Every structure is written in C-alpha cells, then in structure tokens.
Length: 147
Image (tube, rainbow, N blue to C red; front, top):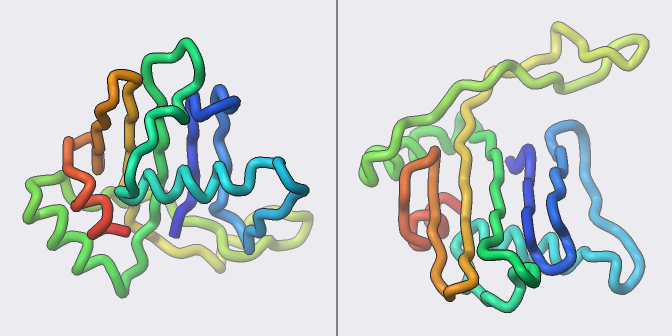
C-alpha cells in the first residue's frame, strides 16, 4: 500500500508530500485540479514511460518518491525481487495505527507491524531517468515488477 507520495518539480508542482497512510483515500476535484498529475506520477513511479516535458521549467530534474508498505501476503515475493537484484531487504517501520481511539488518538490495540520499501524515480532535463529501490539503482523493469 502506498503510504506517502512525494513529488518535486513536476510541471507546476514544486514540492508536495501526500500522506496516504491513514484511512480510505479518494482523489477528487474539478477539471484542472491535478488529479491526472497524481495518476501520471504514480505511473512513472512504477516504471511507466517518461515524458521529459513534465519537468518544471528551469529545473534540471524531477523526483517522485513513494513509501510503500508490503503486506504479509506479498512480503516473500517482494523479498525475492529485492534479493535477485541485490537490494537491501525490506525495512521494518514502526507499527501503523489502524483505528482511532477516544479523542482521535491512535488505538494502541489496533496496530500492525509492516515492512516498507522506498521507491524513487528521477527524471532529468537531459532526457534520461534513474530509478531506485531502497536507494539501490534499478531499471524500470524492476519498478514494474514491484508494482
């Protein structure tokens, strides 16, 4: 599950961070609000074809980064991909609150331990890109496989 999305220098977006870790998330908005930008950013993050014209004017590179929690069901398959590509295995993050308790505070009894990976894609104005999983360089095929 995508927990956090960071986008830098994508068209008119200088730097945004979107926290998707709590609850059910819906992307809505009027025409031109930027919904397609978010979907296209996710596509790039997962190895989609790059269009270098989306890099903000007067910027050398654009960065899209996602923090992804891996479910127990998918952990073995993801670890196999990481091992095959000599990537540091999954990081364990602090437990995430599932439900809010009284007063809006996270409920201590409703937490799960989860493993995370950090996926990053950088597009450069000189028409090349670099991809990373846990700060290890990879190709777009590895991003597609993880996706």
